[in-house]
Image 1 (cartoon, rainbow, N blue to C red):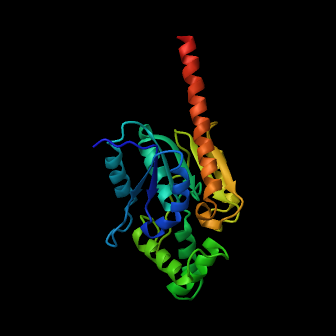
Image 2 (cartoon, helix red, strand yellow):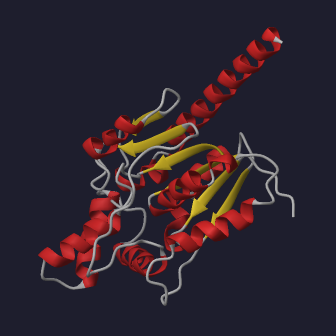
Image 3 (cartoon, rainbow, N blue to C red):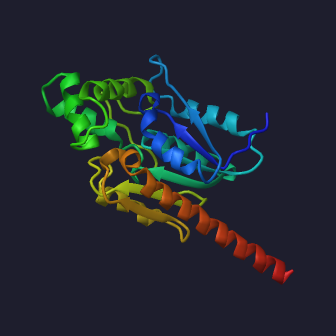
Length: 248
């Protein structure tokens, strides 16, 4: 099967995928966007490696390297894939992904579960206000349901009994890392830890607002940054091709 698209947007959190849609709609006006979704079964302890295998099977039909992107745990999946199969990835865009990739909203949830004596539903209700801010996109009950499902369905390596870590470091292809200045999970000091792994063609950008799901609240701003990043790559590659042609 032959596939043809410019950007593959990953979703390893099916219950949260609607928060990606405003950004993807903005990007679809400028390039061909495809979406790839993974859902972990409740019988799997942590299926990140299995998700990488399935993603690679899917991308075997792509005739050229593609732009790869994702938010949160979906971005962690993209980062893991890009490190394992760099020849398949033209560039990598990570939204709300820490330099220690295991730091996700679930990390904060499980830490709070150990510290605060309250029910899962009560804690998730508090978590929604932290992740989304005062202007909730949906009713608290609906957001709690989505976050609760994500605890069961995403390939997160964490559990109530153990918080995992993942390898730090950069990638071979150009990298764009985006975060929000008021994200309680990947807050600015955590985001800036990426700089120690950056190459000359990597970029870090912070959205002025939007909390953890800033790409939902500020899709135009985020989309503009992503498009600018890709256009710069195109310009650099064009200059390199002209230089090679001149030297030949």
